[in-house]
Image (cartoon, rainbow, N blue to C red; front, side, top):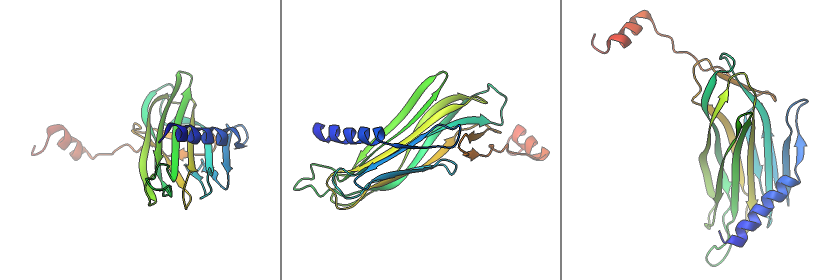
Length: 218
């Protein structure tokens, strides 16, 4: 993307997030939603998803910064847990109507995950755009490896932003929240009501245990 268009897109994102309204439950961190020229953002943290949409209007955009405090459950307090926080992204980026060489994108998106806790802060981000004359489907994962402590809250921010430059349709992105690589018996819960049930411990019969110990054919 030409530098002036990158600045334009980032400026739109900054304006969207700066003008966001807040939504939260009592005692939980506030989430921020914003949009302009018909764009908007949505989130349902108990159900584990965030989303943003834009319209065909030039400079339309939508954004949400969904914020919640999470905690690893099912393990002894202070147990160190290495896991992966994932947003599974799906959606559509609008086709570019720029002529003759599609210098400017139709739709674009910027998505980030931030984790903050007493030991510091980490983040992951992805930028995507569509300069083609056809709508482009989005299906990809944004992963953030994290090391957290069981029983100690850590704050997560999920922030999808979509915008429209020169396009004949709107763009949209949706992110599903996942926690991967958790150890057995570990679960996740959040202030706003997200719940991931504990990872099951695989059960074996005594015969199966002997087979695993002795190896095949024993």
